Structure formats: structure tokens, C-alpha cells
Image (cartoon, rainbow, N blue to C red):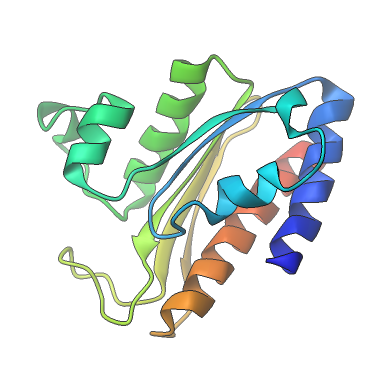
Length: 160
């Protein structure tokens, strides 16, 4: 967690300096991204909200994305990560949306992705989607790696 908070401190400094805000949707990180951002003192200046979108019901209820709205998408994919990031940005009227969706392990998911697969996206003044494959089935290590990668992706966009 200390590594994540270290990255989050850099993200927070950028957001505060820019007077910008963020909202987060995460799945296989289970709230680690949000917890890291909230661990930084002064988080209320930039953090508007977050959601752990781990199930279909959570997607429908928290993100207001219906089953029909998922046509052409599948969970744990780059397009779905982008949809989540954009949806968070819109729903919270934030400057930035950040999302993560994947398979932490120890097994893969029902969509055919191996453990260690994660897609993350940033939506905002600059947007990007990426996929990480750790090649590991260590659930806790993957959760940490996914969260760190998502935070670093956001940091790169903020520093650009």
C-alpha cells in the first residue's frame, strides 16, 4: 500500500495544482485505487467518488450501464475500461475518470482472460487505454500491480 500511496501523492499534487477532480471505477483492484487516493491528506479537494464495479448487478446499479448498453462490450476488455472511465467522468462531472477491470487470480475469468490480465483507462483532457498482463496468478500481487499501473497511467497523463 505504501507504494500505491506514493504514486497517489504525486497524482494528488498534480490534481490540486490544476484544480481538477477525479472519479474512479475499479473491479479487480477491489478499491485499492480509491483507497490510495483517499489516503493522501486533502483528498476532498480532488476525489469526487469511486465504485467497485465487480459484478453485473454493480455495473447496472452503480454505473447505470444496462445489459443492452453492454452490447459490443465484454468485461475485462479495453473498450469496457474506456466505457467505465468515461461513465465515471460523466456521472460525477469530474475532470478525469479512471477505471480498471481484470482478472486478479488465482484463476482466469469466464471471458477467457488469464489471471494477471487487467485493462485500465483514463478519460479526460487526455485519454488512454492500456492492457497489463503480469503472467502471475498471485491475486494480491496482481491487485497491487493493477492499481499501481492504473495510477501511473493517470500520472503520465497529468504530467504530459
